[in-house]
Length: 126
Ligand SMILES: [Zn+2]
Ligand SMILES: [Zn+2]
Image (tube, rainbow, N blue to C red; front, side, top):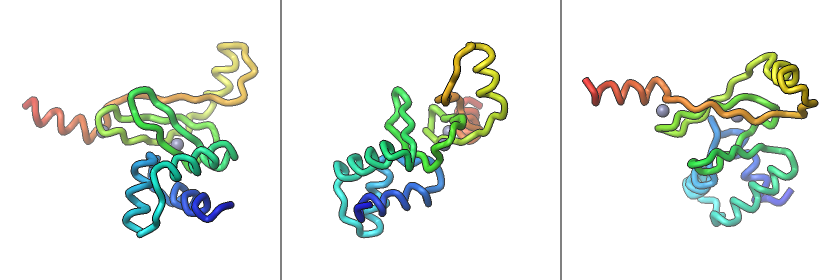
């Protein structure tokens, strides 16, 4: 692994959540690591292609990266863009039975408004 790729890999692994390339760029800046945003994108794509990390592409949101590469469900708050992981047991089996397809994996994102954002909204309304 190149040093830059190695650095980014450990950053994604240690990140609490699902960082965007921009967030990793800011982290690099904070840590005085010199890496351009283009270099970050290129190395993140390499890591994705190698199956070391996963990319989460959601329409209307910037791409995010995931230290987990196993199938799991994402829930994104459409207001603050926080992504949470969920393990929904039996989902793959359920989908296989319903579709009759020999599914290898799935990619499921739930959209919702998180409790924090709901609270904020409520404060504005009342
Ligand atoms: Zn939220
Ligand atoms: Zn995830």
